[in-house]
Length: 137
Image 1 (tube, rainbow, N blue to C red):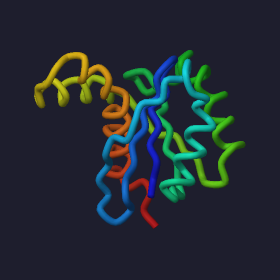
Image 2: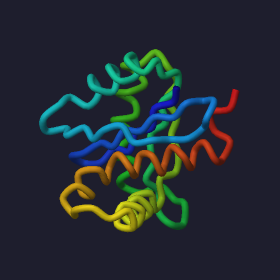
Image 3: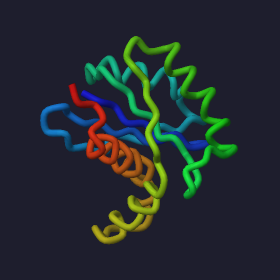
Image 4: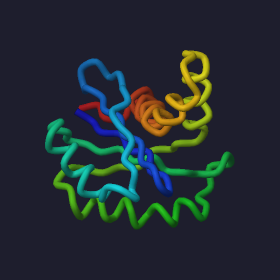
């Protein structure tokens, strides 16, 4: 299994993909004000028997690293220190926009869409990683 992480300032979206089907699906949103995100991700990796963690890398539209990349580098380093599996980064440009559009097209209440947004953004990022050939053995 591959775990996808879309870290935000407060909420962290989580998705998972099976290496055989290569389809990502949303799992949950971690509220970092209520839960230690590193501890929860360690727990999810163990529970899902994940052997790879893919973390969204927020780059600008031109592809250059910005302030948010620097801010998240500490989070990625903490994950690498806490986990015994590989942790890689993948471009997350426009994942939230794509997730918002997909959720809106699917319908439902605005409150439910907002609650699921970060997990769906993680799904979009992880699916992009898989579609680009990442995670192949």
